[in-house]
Every structure is written in C-alpha cells, then in structure tokens.
Length: 161
Image 1 (tube, helix red, strand yellow):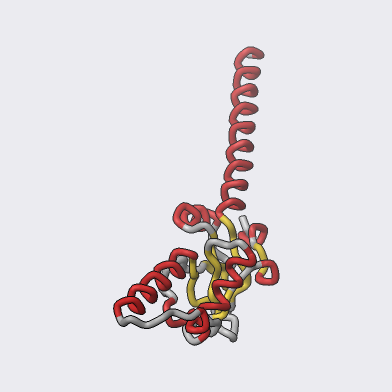
Image 2 (spheres, rainbow, N blue to C red):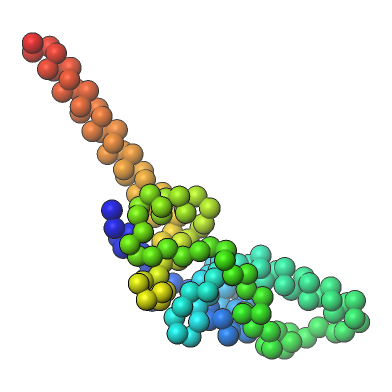
C-alpha cells in the first residue's frame, strides 16, 4: 500500500519555520488550534516537531529564571527567542514517501502525526494517526469478511460432497 494515499500535503499542514520567534510560534499554534506542528527550514527541510508542552517548558523555565534574577518579563522578550533555540531535534522522526504501510502503523503507535519527506529530504506533508487507524479498521473488516466468506465456501464444499 502506498502511503501517498494517507498524505496530507504541506499546503494543508500547519507548520513553523525554525527562524520564527517564540511569539510567532505561540500565535500560530494558538490560531490553528494545534497541539504539535512540524518545524522546517526555509529551504523546506524538516528539522523536528514542536509541541505545546515544549513551549510551556520553555516559558516556565524563562519565568523561573526571570524571577530568580529579579527581571521583569515582557512579551516583547519572546520576539528575540527563536524556535531553533529550543527545538528538541530527533523527536517525531520523518519517514520517506516510499515507507511501508507496516512501518507507518508502527510509527503511528507513538506519534500523533508522522512527517513525510521525499527523496531530496524535502518536507512534503504528514500522515495522521487517525488516517492510519481508519485504514487499519477497513483492513480488519475486509479480513473478517474474507474469512467469513472462506468459511462459508468450506462448509458448502463439505455438504456438497
């Protein structure tokens, strides 16, 4: 099975660039209502995924540090902090467009979405866990139907002999 049939293309995916400020990231994630988004370089290379949790951890540490140093916090401070400064690389690794369906299922166990890259390592979209589970459900129903049909054929064959 070709994973392209599961692909949500880049044009329909909410993503951030690694040179976006923390403020831009917060605004975009909030506006689109996402809990995690892919992060790309300007030349369309996938570099990681950033989640609401990553942002909250950074903000919490920033606030604690500011309090410790008796420094006031201003939202404008977040215009000079960039996504690449606190992005945890390596989480949510991408797959290539030619990846097998089995590997996609295995990845979906631990990832809400799976980033997909092409042969030039360019980001082309995502596959969601929901779409993988939906296909698994179709496959299971088909398997059950075929097994039922096979059992009926065997029963009919036995009674005819």
